[in-house]
Image 1 (cartoon, rainbow, N blue to C red):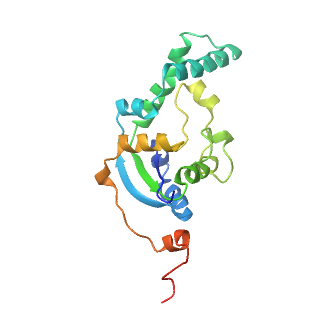
Image 2 (image 1 turned 30 degrees about the vertical axis):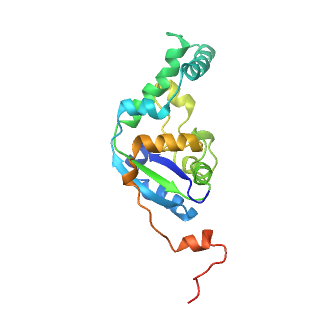
Image 3 (image 1 turned 180 degrees about the vertical axis):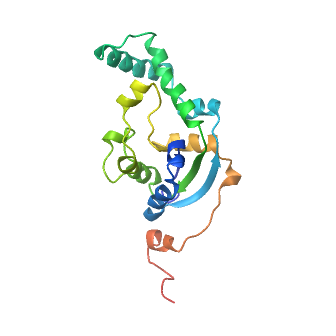
Length: 197
């Protein structure tokens, strides 16, 4: 449990808005440990593998989009599944528009801690105090009108199986650094041995 890993990707909007330091400092203050960093431009084919959606997901999301279009009086021009696939197409365009910073964090309940700090996927409804809630105001509605991905600054893994799969997609095992931090004694040492000399 003390070594759970999670993937975080600071998206192109987070990079372009100079929020790297702010985002990293929020994770750092929790006591989680950074074990890998990579600054690069993502590959569109790997984006499709990263999001790993099936036809049922595309159908469900697409049906929601069709319903929203009809309610707004906007013409429905294609099958629901294609609107669903547009979500990943738009994400692929957005995520490859500029560099990203991918990183892996490790520590007790790393996935849940990171999700709590990042906030909900839609910035407009994300809680104040979260990264998305504090630093952006984009919404599903505005992104839908603009036919683009929601600009929500950051991606984080949602659950352990997903984290393991995503980390393996973007990082090789040799890219991880194992090291000790003094703060680990405070966070994890049962008896606090070695604090006093």
